[in-house]
Length: 117
Length: 108
View 1 (spheres, each protein chain N blue to C red):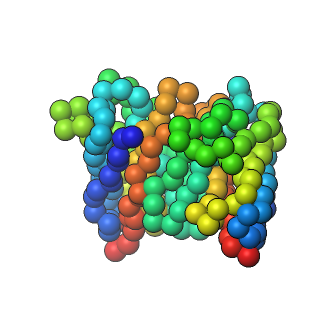
View 2 (tube, one colour):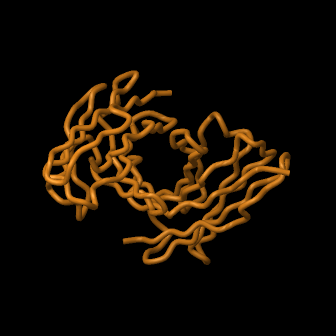
């Protein structure tokens, strides 16, 4: 079973950029698809998008204009960048391993990111 | 975007009882690409069921999924103490993927 661990700042100021990294262990990142998912307080989960190890991406249209994902196969990790954040971006952010069909077979524990000045 | 509505919001049961959780989609889920997850607070969510009725690797057979189209059910027979958690469904037949709001299964 693959283990995933999110890391990054827990506090980001409004209008700045949220950056998170997901470290993958117990398996190679050079297979499957790798996703970011978030859950704002009291709300349902929201899929942000995925990246393939080749670098191909697919983002949720609701966030597409602000999202960039990247993958570093040498470090076995992938990253999320969300620009111009507001309080509405406050959430627990999860990284996950996704099959080619779209279900999430492995998840990280999640990391809380708060957007506040 | 497909909206998934789960019911009930909270389910109070005792260990040993059976549980039935519902997930209804606003439109038909393509290929019945519907998954169920279990989420314990502070832990990573765990995939239980994919493709509406296929158990994921290592999942006990007391968990079963059924349904097709717009109506899906997760059944847990003979509840164990570790089964009390939040359960959510996800559709991956259409982009963007979407999730239900969750059902909290609590000890009565």
